[in-house]
Amino acid sequence: MSGTDTARKLIEATQELLWERGYVGTSPRAIQQRAGAGQGSMYHHFGGKPDLARAAVRRSAEELRTLADAELAREGSARARVAGYLRREREVLRGCRLGGLAQDPDVVADPELRAPLSQTFAWLRTRLAEVLEEGRGNGEFGPALDPAGVAAAIVAVVQGGYVLARSAGAPEPFHEATDGLLALLDAHATGTGATAGAVTGAVTGAAS
Image (cartoon, rainbow, N blue to C red; front, side, top):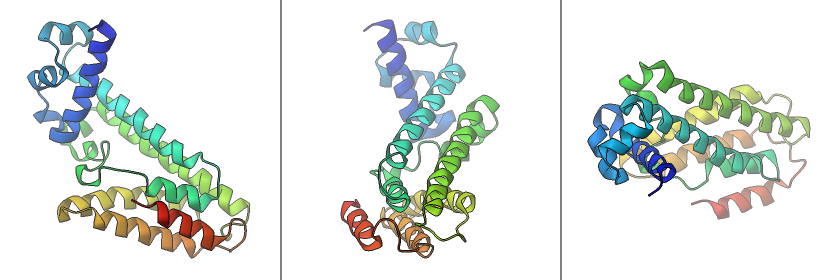
C-alpha cells in the first residue's frame, strides 16, 4: 500500500469512527485497526489523533458539499432541486456525519474541528437560498417567500429529522418532516414555471 493510499485509508477510517463513536471514542488504535495501518504509518502521515481528526472532518465537510450541490445544481425547477436534496439517499438512522459532530463537546471545543462544520452549514444555507431566490425571481414562488429564512429552516428540519428518526429507531419521522417542509414550500408556489403537479409527482415517485 502506497503512502498516499495509507493516508487516505487513515482519513476514511477516522471519518467512519467519528461518525460511529464521536471524538473520545475514536482511539488511535481503533483508527489503525480500521485502516489496516500500523502505528508508524499513522504518525508518519499525521502528527497524532487531533491532526488526523481535523483532516477527517474537513473531508466529511467536502463530501457533504459535493452531495448537496449534485442535487442543487441540477437542471429543473427550484422546488424540484430542493426536493432532490431533501430526498436524496441517506443513512438516516446513522444521523448526519457533520451534524452529529456538532453535538460532540470535544469537537465544538476545538476551533479547528468546529470550523468545517460552521463553514459547511453556512455554505449550505447560502446555496439553498440561491436556489430559492432563483425560484422567486422566475415566478415559481411568490414574492412573500424569504429565501434566506426558508433555507435556514430547511437545514434545521433536516438536522432535526435525523434526531427524530434516530430516537424512534425508524426513518419515517425524517421523511415526514421533509415532506411537511415541502408542503409548506408549496404554499408559496404560484403555479407558473414548471407544472406543479408534474414536479410533485416526479419527485414523489423518486422518493426513497
